[in-house]
Length: 137
Image 1 (tube, one colour):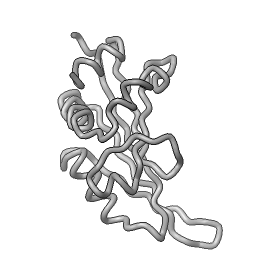
Image 2 (cartoon, rainbow, N blue to C red):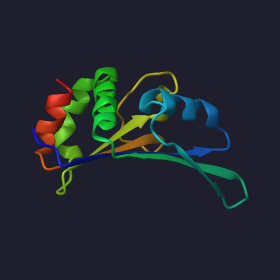
Image 3 (cartoon, one colour):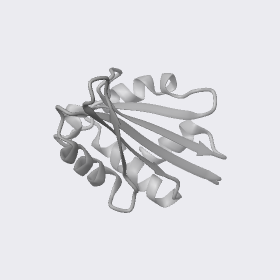
């Protein structure tokens, strides 16, 4: 399979009541120390700190490795497989959301709520389903 480019983006919002270090440490374990993790400090209406944490990876081999780890770590993999076509947009982006509370416990649980770790995968030059099936087999 000839892959022109692949990108993986991860993003979450962390409120003052949550443990920033736990979530960042969990992201480092998932993405490896080779992935940049950016923490941006925002402020809520009452001046409370809100952290936007994100990473963008475009190295093909690192993205493949991270996706492989993600696929093998799903607690509810059948949920992903049964809903994967609903998670792909017209441009071929795959959108997956993980439960943030389960994530810090080391469990990847797919949810469709708001308090989540958001993941976007973009593979260019290949069929998105073929790409995911090859890595997640």
